[in-house]
Image (cartoon, rainbow, N blue to C red; front, top):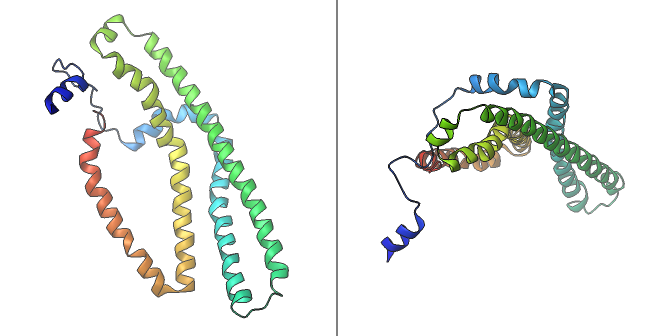
Length: 213
């Protein structure tokens, strides 16, 4: 029964791999190849970088307001500090909403315009290829590279970089705040990082070659 199900679900195989393996390309070459598509957006890229920095800063400030509310209001049972803590927290929430919306809007705008330019360039290249190219390559492989691979490139060179910078700044700011508040608890909380990094590296090795198939 298992073999019959496998025969029904597996596509016919003629000895060729379903997806042609892609070679390793240095990051420097990737940036050099796709920078022409991003050059005309460099002003918006700079503005996006500002929002990327502001988002974790505002988030950290909002969390710090909770710390003040606990230490200055709840523990001493004194409501007087709430006169300035509450309005400041509301103002930070409003600023956080504007910053988050602005960052998301700019990142999405840049990503979609980059995808449009890249797909237009790729389609111009594909339309100039000979018919023999399409005879020698699987249709599904070509379609996947025109759609999914282009999206992956955008994530790698644009939106993924923005998210990585934002997450890195969040980790840095929150780690500094943790060590400032209580370094012993901060060390205990950060002990899981090497374990998670080792596990991710271990499981990513077998997943990477299997993911194209």
